[in-house]
Image (cartoon, helix red, strand yellow):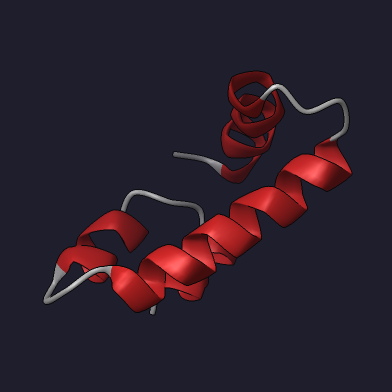
Length: 58
C-alpha cells in the first residue's frame, strides 16, 4: 500500500476528523502491534505498509 493511500484510509476507517489525529493513532497502534505480534508476523505486516509506518513494527 502506498503512503498517500494509507493516510487517506486511516481517518475514514477510524472515524477521525483530521489527518494529524489519524497519523498519530496509526503510529501508536502499529507500535503496540509490533511489540505484541510474535515470530515473523511483524515483518509480514510491515511488508504491506508504507515505509514510514513499516519501520514502527520492527
